[in-house]
Length: 425
Image 1 (cartoon, rainbow, N blue to C red):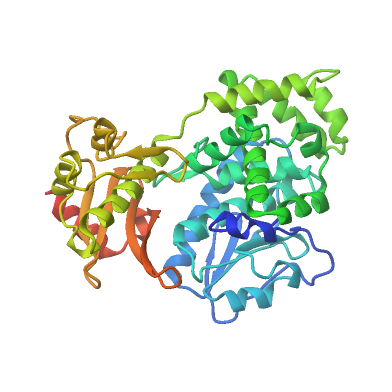
Image 2: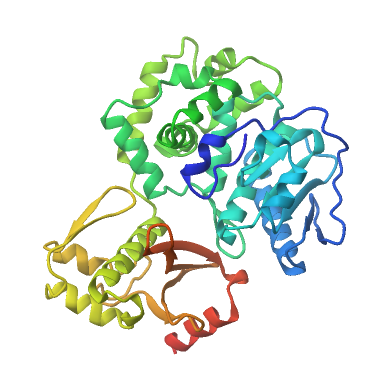
């Protein structure tokens, strides 16, 4: 399947990743930059540095795939990964049915392709983690994995966080969790029996119904995988591994589920256990930080009118706590609301969960973009990753919007690194 794109807005374009008869199993990018690792051949027209970064990340995420799903065999040829700078070049390379996507794994070519145009580096790398798992699944585990399981696992790896040396898995994103919890409260989730029986055509149909439906179907599949890997101290991990093993050996899904989780599997009881698990989850600290940073930037835009006047976090915090911004109410991307009369929560916005110092301290760093003079809010407390929030002007809306993204430290600009170091001294 096509990866989830930078936003749920493009999920409705999801199409199968398996295409037959599309040519040779090797793709060559003339004049491109190359990086060869133990399991991958990476080609790109972006830069040599970028090819090496992609190579390191793909090799590292491969180790995560293979260590968690050992005993299925191995890939005997290196995987092809091609990342284009321009979407038009990407679309020349992939089948017509997936044009408009951010990335895709084409099994007949053994090719994982993506593009960087209009996308953050974080988004590109996450697409590669997702599609890379489809590549691994097809080559190493099974060519006939049930769609919900294949997509759920790919989304699980999509959410992985690189710490500079390895990946941290099992992250719980705020928006994805809110999507599931709201669906549970309104009885809007897809029943397990229906989800498990969806083939690729039914999956595509559901994703085309609406952006909301597409977001739900991916989030629910992610949630089931998260449950199987993490609920009750790993109670279901053995069953999950057995399920994949049975599927890899050609067992049909219904029989494999019963063999893995008990004869006469009661899907309703299984689903109820999952619901209880999802409702008990909280967003991971990283996503709390991202949400807090977005709200701080939104409040600064309101408080200062002109975003370029925002040059002091302490001044903004004092002003908000003193009520100088007037009455207001904002909503986090997760759906949670915050208002001007919730002083304790307003103050907590400025303190990161990673920060073990006095809770009254401000955890973030405020920098200025040297080219535009616009503020950039930075959290530099997660190993290997810089989280940053900044303004961009959306022409069709006629206003400044806020974007929050993770930047792999090795890809951060020298100006950003220097700015952080200067503020920390």
